[in-house]
Amino acid sequence: MENKTATVKMRNITKTFGSVVANDKVWLDIYKGEILALLGENGSGKTTLMNMLSGIYFPDEGQIFINDREVVIRSPKDAFDYGIGMIHQHFKLVDVLTAVENIVLGLDEPGRLDLDRAAKKVQALCDAYGFEVDPWQKVYNMSVSQKQTVEIIKVLYRGADILILDEPTAVLTPQETDKLFTVLRNMRNDGKAIVIITHKMNEVEELSDRVAILRHGQFVGDMPTAQSNAREMTNMLVGHPVSLSIERPEPKDPKPRIRVEHLTVRNIDGVVKLDDVSFTANSGEVLGVAGISGCGQKELLEAIAGLQPVERGSITYVNDDGREEPILGKDPLSIAEMGVSLSFVPEDRLGMGLVGNMDISANMMLRSYRRGRSPFLDRKAPQKLAESVVSELEVSTPNLTTPVRRLSGGNVQKVLVGREIASAPTVLLTAYAVRGLDIHSSYTIYNLINRQKERGVAVIYVGEDLDVLLELSDRILVLCGGKVSGIVEGRGAKKRDVGLMMTRLGGEKDHD
Image (cartoon, rainbow, N blue to C red; front, side, top):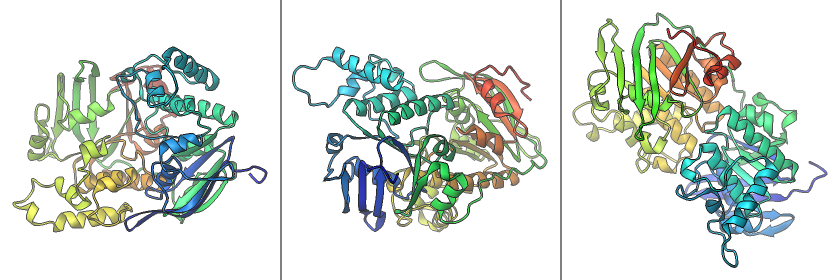
């Protein structure tokens, strides 16, 4: 980059929240015609830094230069005026409006709004960069990737030349990710400056031109992606060597723990999400669940946990002595009271998993508030558990009394997963347990899951990363369109074969 002039220069950028220093005198350059991957552990200040560039936060100290001119960015409108747009993890769209209506919403343009002309401009952007979106489609009818596309077009429509994407592939399928990467490369080739905040090292290596790394809020260095690799980058962002291998112990004396037979589930709209699903989850085993997003993975775990109505079929818990007890038809509390410890790590961390306004200790107490005579009078156990989770999972928090809503998304996930694992379950149900976690934290979770497996816990693991599923799972249940397209052994399974089964091209396998 020696011969290039940075289109964005951030100098000595500092931002604090109370006693927490999110960014500490950060220097960062962003170049036109480049895809920059911004890396760091959860809570390292990546999103905070980009939020200051996009006008959501204002720095306590430091300077920002756009094309060598110092600017002051106090709002997202200011950022747009300087050609900066940020696409967040959580989309900011109005569901009942069309794509084009969302794109022009809030624009202060002279004269009468001409939606037809706007739609033509949107279509021209789609043609230029390879987007696939119908300008007249309602948002509520869109897939996640289509909504993301609308968000990207929205900032391009406003003239953005500098785009920031926060975890852009978090909820995308591999096919959707490939399409997004093609679009981003097209924009880079058109001279756009692109920053991606991500934890996925394989995507960093595949997509980015340069990598910049933050650690504990400080800039620790950057390098051309081609001159590094995942291990070196991980060691740099953590500050010490890290093992990137998942140890998969052999199951010891696996026995049936959960038996699901002919399970059919419809959602609230009457759409079949699970269709005649049958399988057995064994103790001391990790059963991975693979499938394209929306193929019934979430509904499957919720049905087992008593959170999802079931149209037909049976779910049975098998005790150590072989005695079988039906789970189906019981509410979550009744399932817990019958001695079945089902831990559920949901997708919606703060909606279903934790109470945002409560601190870490109080959220730990929620998991066990039915146990004992007066848990609310004795906070010692939840306090001890909170300290253990914060220490073992390296949760970045000012203190244990900080409300969890003030933690970064990755740290919220650590608290949730840590609490569920610490509850000593006999069955652990995990949905996207490492979503939003940095690579170091992800491998910590994988190791914790394996420790549960060695304790004899039956683990059902739903994950987005097929490579991890193949490395972590003893068996893999493959879902396609709510049906079981096969169950394969994790050891020796080929990624391509499982991928084909996810799209029904791989044929049917035995459901044993």
